[in-house]
Image 1 (cartoon, one colour):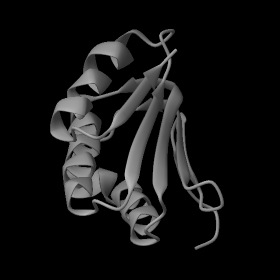
Image 2 (cartoon, one colour):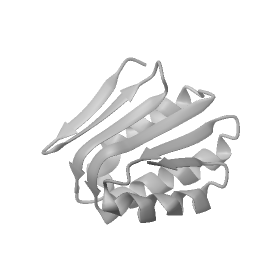
Image 3 (cartoon, helix red, strand yellow):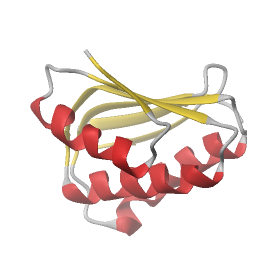
Image 4 (tube, helix red, strand yellow):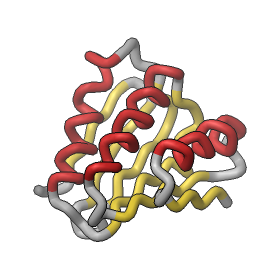
Length: 117
């Protein structure tokens, strides 16, 4: 898998297979599951590589609507089946929505490591 990215109006999602990291930037407010499908595909392709650790970096994601949070939650739930892969989510205290919304991901995947700085 080479570096992949999904770009749209005001946002970018990029994968880096070398570090098993997916970077989210900008503001994502897409319509629903169909609109989020390219991002889900990118996340699933990263998970299919079965790295020891997958990092989701949302430090530069200023906004994610409820459909996006739902998409991320479903991905995290799916990671329960991949017990060999540790999941890390990196957030920023500068983005008000992250502390509350990302905290819920820990409930969905007890082994998830959440770092909000």
